[in-house]
Structure formats: C-alpha cells, structure tokens
Image (tube, rainbow, N blue to C red):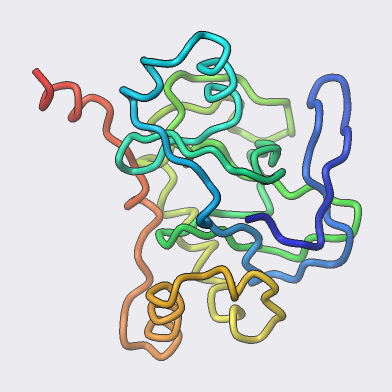
Length: 202
C-alpha cells in the first residue's frame, strides 16, 4: 500500500505516469508497505500465463528474495526509477523516505534493488551510474544501508499513516531496533540470486 498523501500523475511522454506527493512527506516516513492485497506470482505461475499477462507482470512487478513476482494492487506499481531516489526499500517489506519529499515531487525508487532480470539504461540524471544491473544490490547495498540508517530513528518521530498496515511482527522489529536490542538488517537480504537458483534446479 502506497502512502495516502500521493496521487498518480502523468509525468512526461518519456517517463509516463508516476506517483507524486500531495503533501510534505518527511524523511523517516514509511512510504509503502507490502499488504494483504498485493499479489505474488511464482516463476511457474508466470510461465503458465498468456503473453498479455506476462507483459503486464514484466512491466509492473518486482522480484522478491524468493524469486517471485510481486504485483502491487494500488498505484504503488507506478513508482519510477531514479539513481538518486528519495525512497529506499528495507529488509522488512516496507519502504522509507530517506529525505523530505516535497508536495508535487515524485516518489522514486532505485530499481537496482528490485532484482531486475536484465540491465536497462536509465534517464540521464547527471549521476555516475547510467545503467541498472541485476547485481546492483550486491554492489551498492552498503551505500543504501547507510542511507536507511540515517533516517530509521525518525520512524517514531513522524506521522506514519501506514502504521496500521504493518504486521505486528514488523512493528515489534522496529521497536527492538530503535531500542538497540536488535541490529538493522541489511537491504542485501532482499537479493535473489538467479545463478544460484539455476544451479540448484539442475
């Protein structure tokens, strides 16, 4: 479920639609949560579908650590890529704003942590990275982990409209981390190793 203070807007012919903030979303705000309406499809489910449905899943899903495709039921599936994203996923099936997101600003993810299957060249944003690769999570997880750590403590300091959607076990994890009873897990735990899975299936 995407943050309620957002709406779907047409961005440009190059980008298409995107998710835009309608109010200030402060750093530390949970911007998306995997919820009970989001659907998960196994590789076999995908293979058994007609090309029309495969194309839709190719476009609007991400792969989780089990290699399954996750389709968001709401406009969360329209969040666009940025090499300088203002949201980051965590190891706990939710995303967090790593800086203040202003009204009218797009919510963006770095597709490098979404277990893409093939490289693609992103829009030139003046960053050193120009292409997203399937193994970006291995390369950049420490950078992303540090960005999450800088704002994670703010979770209890800002308004969280999506808190009711968080499972009890996730809320408990957050409490333990904030109390120093448990370490913040790395975003690397979301990585799906395609090669390892291919070898195991032989």
